[in-house]
Amino acid sequence: MSAPDPKAARLGIGQVINELSEEFPDISLSRIRYYNEQGLIEPERTQSGYRKFSYADVERLRFILRMQKDRFWPLSHIRQALDQMDNGEAPEMELLATLRVPQVALAPDGLPTAQSMVEGAGATRMSREELLDSASIDGELLDQLEEFELIRRRPQQKYYDADALVVASLAGELAKQGIEPRHLRGFRTAADREVALMEQAVPQSTRQSAEGAARVSELAALTVRLHTVLVRSGLRG
Image (cartoon, rainbow, N blue to C red; front, side, top):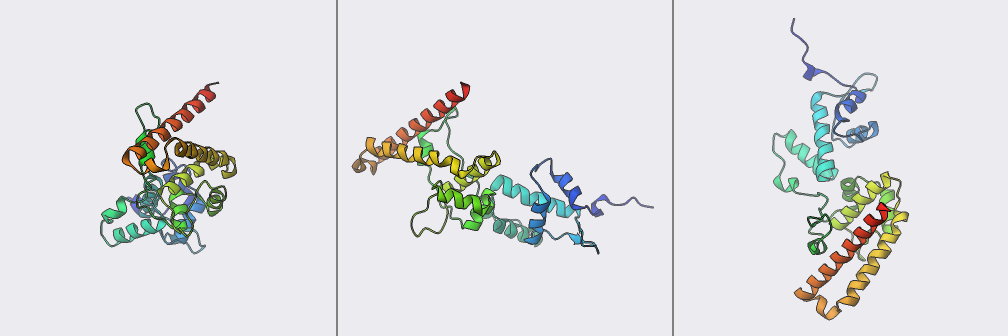
């Protein structure tokens, strides 16, 4: 009599969480159910209605979670990639390069550089749903970020850019520590004051030139570095 094939086993949702929790500590029942409701995974159902997952389902979940964690893909991108893989195709290359949270250029001492200030928001254009999905935050948190102007959009601008993605992702992490958008209003005020200082130091007539833009970037980096060191010094007591 041959031994049962472990790959043919069916796991309960709790067992699936045990399989994935080491790599994804925040995995939850509700999250798996949500992916099921969105049609990203389709586990079998028992006569009693309980979900039963194959090991292929577990690996599919692992892919979904990795793309959200490492690449900040919205579910629309993940669904497209899964559909391509289901059809025996490799995900399109343009998908593989999209929607990672932008990284800030840092000097060897770990502080921002002038380059940090000139890195633009790029061509990233996201809908509200894509931003929520990519930053792993809910609509209420995004509404608060906009209410307190931590995320700003120009009049008539319907999309969100890469800067909004960074702010939303950071705010999501801070929220996990109990720090809400209303606590962050001082950051917006401080940033606006620093911008005003840059505008005062470099006249509008010269800011449009390459030399003027470079000076603004350098001044901005210096003020951010100063702020960082002051915070670090304050924490040391």
